[in-house]
Amino acid sequence: MSKNVYVVYFIATYGEGGPTDDCIEFNNFLEKNKSGLNNNIHNVNYSVFGLGSSKYEFFNQMAKKFDKFLEKSGGNRYTE
Image 1: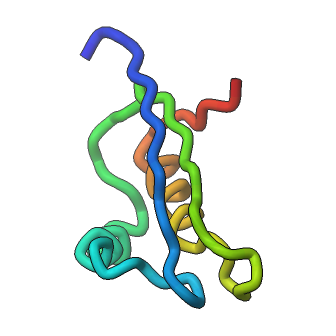
Image 2: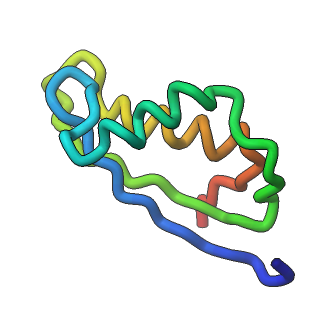
């Protein structure tokens, strides 16, 4: 891929930091690949928008987990 890519992910957390029902399989994938992917995604600029309630101890845990995964896979957190 020769062009830079900009991606925004919207990730919801359910209850005490767990995945929503539709995200359980994705969460299992993240758990199995905690060190990231071997693919080089250095040209992917990303932002993760977490959806959850700050009333819970593990506020936006799914979004934080996915952010770490993307960073370890070589992505660039887009902050502008």
